[in-house]
Image (cartoon, rainbow, N blue to C red; front, side, top):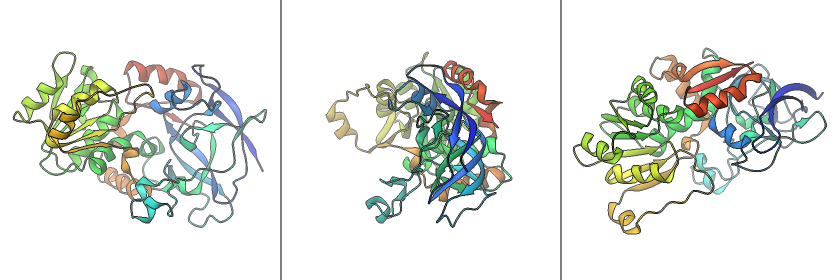
Length: 361
């Protein structure tokens, strides 16, 4: 039977999000209802509220979550009620051309729930990234549920659902950072610090953190940065070159997603080095680079979407690394809040006061 729960909804572009009563239908074939235990507050949710991703209002916000499977629909054989899961927004199809070529992290036909969740008046909701987890319960495709070790608290495990995975994957999966590499990370919020943690975990020799906020640079050192550069005070390109023997870093990760920071990343890398864009640009942004420089400097210019992850492979592994003490996921949690505190969490995020606020239900 369909049930009503509380959830955080963005009703119109730029309007404050509010807690509303929403209706969760019974799961259909291939679907699951998950009782959400924790959900991180991510910049993507703010982008949805501001209409920067689409105009399919109203949105049910939240997507970086962990919880327990409540009930599953027909045909679901690999989940059962009571399973502890992290929700993901890349439920691969296994059949598209990317999956068929053995590259499921590029899947072109990922799954979401077929049925809509609705407001109490019947209006359908658009769930953020196909999840909508600022809610007591949510309806997802069963493939969006990744089982992990329940010893990790939900406010920690859920961070793998987006930002931490994006940053770790940008360094390890997309950037291919390895032992003895030099790495620079521009932008030291949650995603950038996750990239730093990933680079440290795989043995990078030097990890240079770049930001305009000394507080964030201090946080970056806690995750493994060996050097810091405040780009308000110093030219980051020159600073990165100086710290790498005059040649630039092997891998430079732009975790901001602005034309200015991308150009810094482009010129701060070594010849034949790699640039990884993981910060999300606004739709109106444009990039102007001399094509001869693109040709002459060689190397790779890559974008990293969700850290090029495969949730079924990466989430359990990263949880295991956390339990071994090798990946400090808990340090990303600045504080826990309730459903009614999401707007204040957005404000704190915009001021740079937090790495992650996490809604706990």
